[in-house]
Image (spheres, rainbow, N blue to C red):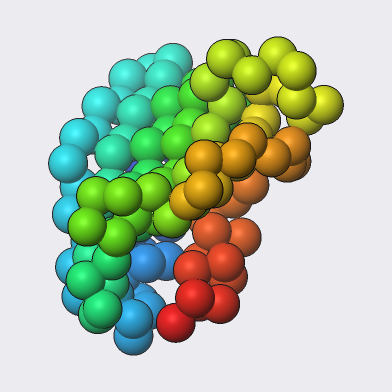
Length: 124
C-alpha cells in the first residue's frame, strides 16, 4: 500500500466513524488533500440537534498529527475546541489544550475522534 493510500484509508475511517452514528445527519468533507508525505482533511459534521463538530487534521505519512483542531459548535459559538496551535506556552500540556465555552484554556492530552464523540454524547 502506498503512503497516500494509507493516508486516504485513515481519513476514510474517520468519515465512516461519524457516518455510522445515529446522532449524525450529515458528514461533509469540506477539504481533502492527500500526497505521498502528508494529508489534510476538514470535516463538518451536522448533528440531529443542529450542533456541529468540525474536524481538521494535518498528518504525515506515518499518520502522526502535525496539526489538529476538533471543534464542537452551536450556532457558530464554541462549546469546546481541542487543538495544538502553539499559542499557550503556559499550559503544562503545551501545545495540546482545550478551549471551553467560557473562554478558559485547559491543559489536556492529544484527543482523538473517540474522545470527541464521547464528550459530545454527554451533552445530548
